[in-house]
Each structure stands twice: as C-alpha cells, then as structure tokens.
Image 1 (cartoon, rainbow, N blue to C red):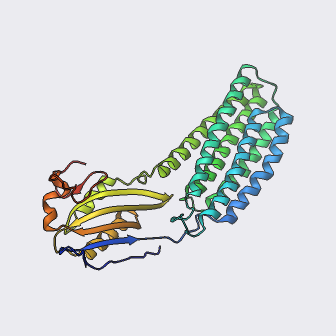
Image 2: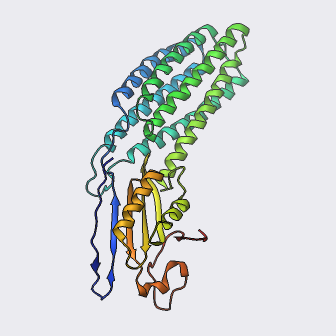
Image 3: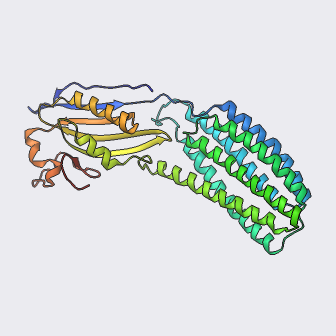
Length: 347
C-alpha cells in the first residue's frame, strides 16, 4: 500500500504568534483490484447455464422449490454482473468532484444485492405459504436429481467466486448469493427425497421456506454492512473512543478532538482528527508516530491529522476546560464528538 505524506513546515501566522501547524496525510489512493474478474465470469457462466435447465425442469415437475432456486440463481447472475460493473467503476481514478473516485459504486452494488434478496424472499415466502395450504402434485424424482446437480454446480460457482478478494463487500454480496443458493439446493434435494419416499408434497414448500430464511439472513447482513458505510460509521471492530484515547496517550499530545473514522469502501478505512501538542513539541514527529500507530494497530492507512501547538493564549480555552471566555470562540468554534486526553475522562 502506497503512502504519501505531505509535511508543512512550521510557519508564522503573521500575528506574532509562532505556531506549529501541520496536516499529515497517510493516503492510499491507488485502487486495488478487489476481485479477479476471470473467476467471477466463470461463476457467472455456471450459474446461467444451470439456471436455464432448472427453469425447464421446475415447470415440468411442478416444483416451487426448483423455480425459487432458479429465481435465486437469476439474482445470483445479476449480482455477479452488477459486481463486475461496479468493479470497473471503482477502478476509475479520482478526478473532478469525485475526490475518492467511484469506489462506493461497489457498496451500492452490495446494497442492491441485499435488497434484491429481501424482496425475493418475501415473494417466495408468500407463494410457499400458499402451497402449504394447497400443495400441488410434485414429481419428486426430477426435483431430487436436479437439486443434486444444482448442489454440484453451486459448489463449483462458490469455489470460483471465493478465489476473488472477498474483503470487498461487493464480491461478498455475490458470494452470499451463491452460498444461500447452495444451501437452498441442499434443502430442495432433501425435499425431493422426502417426496419420493413418502409422497409428502408439502416438503417442497417447506424447503422453499428454508431458502427464504437463508435469503433473509444474507440480505439483512448485506444491507446492514452497506448502510454502515453509507452512514460513515466506524469500521466494524474499530472503537473510535479507544483510538482517540490511544492517540492522546502518545508523548507530547495534550488532546485529540474532531476525531472521525469511516470507510471509503469496504476494507479501506479513513480518519481525520485535530491533535494538540505541548508548546514547543515536535508536530512532525508526533504526526508520524500517530500515523504509524493507526496503521499498525487499527489498519487505518488513510489518516489526515491536523497537528497544532497549544499556544500560551490558548491554554485557558483548551477543550478540556469546557469554559470559553465571553466573546472568544475558543480553539475550535464547532468541535465534533468527544474530547480525548490522558487520564480519566468522559467520552
């Protein structure tokens, strides 16, 4: 991962106050290929080929379980196509008003996949309940044979897509589609076997409800994960308060505020913060130490830090005092979030 660091030398603000002011950036603007397109295309070919066969057999066997699997495979194919398209958009360099490029196109793709799973699960659940009440005649042998072939095809497709980089939420969305389809085929195969052995036609509808439950779980997971990124939430597993306290514990640091941590896209965390250091402290050194710490302990390689000296005139209006003299707006007019400093304090 490449890192560009822009250092601003100490400068005089023209008011007689020598003030160390620095913004350090740990940037990783190179867009990594989040998946291998070739593996995704192999998975797409497998899905489309078997889906056509399954629709024909599902109609002939009067099996809702097979038709629901085919419908799910259609969304599988759509999810892979969407993932491929989003990958192309995300690979475009940042330019113009899109300062991060189009990396979140992949998150939009993942969210669309999640919503598709949720909508489809509702439709299939309705039809499954209807068939539980009035079960049609189901040809168990055809259902069982087709489902077993489907298990093999989906294992091959899942293996193919697993070769891509699943740290991308976009690729993970396509993978979850395939995985729930695999589980669905297993349930359908069991239903076909039950119909063959016992003639219990409702087993087909019950298998459909199993598929629905799996689709709901996968869909909710994708929508939730994509929503966190769109809402600028901190990455899962990263506690901003813990990060701020660790930064405040670094030598020469007095206070950290305006701390924000978010994800540009899946697997690419970013943060910004305002750091105050002791008068006469080495702003450049503090910034370098903080950026190394953020990368090593939290995997944050895109950190923009504004590092300032605490001047004598500012000592009385430091954030930790929480008192601002009349007519003076303090060091930060509009500070966001909690203030982090050494020693016990509230967040």
